Image (cartoon, rainbow, N blue to C red; front, side, top):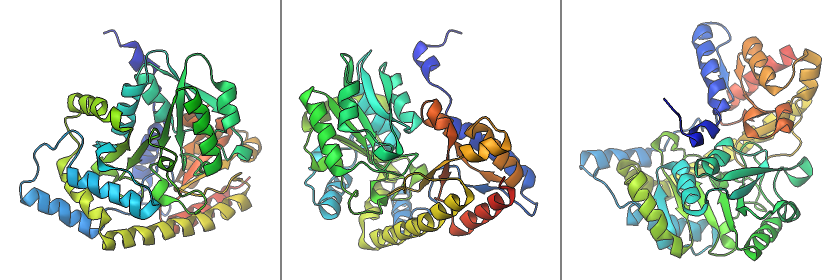
Amino acid sequence: MRIASRAERIEPFYVMEVAKAASQLAREVARSDRPMVFLNIGEPDFTAPPLVQEAAERAVRSGSTQYTPATGLDPLRERISRWYAQRFGIDVPARRIVVTAGASAALQLACLALVGAGDEILMPDPSYPCNRHFVSAADGTAVLVPTTAADRFQLSAAAVEAHWGPRTRGVLLASPSNPTGTSIDPAELRRIHEVVRARDGITLVDEIYLGLSHDARFGQSALVLDDQVVSINSFSKYFNMTGWRLGWLVVPEALVPVIERLAQNLFICPSTVAQHAALACFEPESIAEYERRRAEFKARRDWFIPALDDLGLTVPVMPDGAFYAWADCSAWCAKLGLPGSWEFAFEVMRRAHVAVTPGRDFGSAETRRFVRFSTASSMEHLQEAVGRLREMAP
């Protein structure tokens, strides 16, 4: 059977390949004195709070499970609009908000609407692998632009200008970023957007971790710039609804009918039950719980990053959001005789029963000396993992 070329261009999601190996080993050591500690997947250990669960139950019991409009329930779009006003002081009209089947669907819709065959989209190296694969699936090309710790592993306006070519269509940024947990300085983001607008390009910003910002300097939405920014967001991270598969997209008003037409054909609508449940995310009781959890994620970061640094797994830039640690494991690899972070991840998995994510997924060869730790697990698990790593330290 002949496979379409676009499918052949999509590399495996190595994060999940490592996760499969970790799950297999976890079953083997489950009854041992060292069960597997998972610090590899970016999934909060918290689940949806009580009001959200109760809202889902009510929707099922009342039969509120039929299709919704492709753009999502109007009350949910309006509630998201009010959240932008309350949290960020931004006026984002509900008519510009499209509720989607997760942030993945939002990115797919944005790329299908805006990226043409042969178009190039600039994004930082390192960056979340699926973002470049969405571009590729739309027959575009993701162009990874090298970044450094001095850049906070983010693009700069100068870099965008230097790498803009005749086929460049725009930029796809993430703030805070997966895998680094770093955000773009607001002034630099404005300069980037000015460079893009001057070339009639598009600025797409993945903001799924924005609610988990730990520094007021960075905790502002790119939507503050103007109404031409395309923002992708999600109920998975801050709102702890990963498996519910619900996200949203904020687009210029003229783009809404295009996105709606694509969504109607590709998805019909997001999960109706998840949408009814998500309305309860914005209740004061739920927001208070989310803020308590955000503080817990920060406490984990504040303990875990110095612990990694002490082990020689250096984190070059303190993450200001999300729940990741992007650590340089090259010193360990040199002492252990390992080629890079891929082998390091399996060595740690085998010897310490700690699952981590190698940098292979996130960009060019330079990322192979980094490993991503997820601090979405409990403090107890983080402490256990550090103890085991300390024991195997070269």
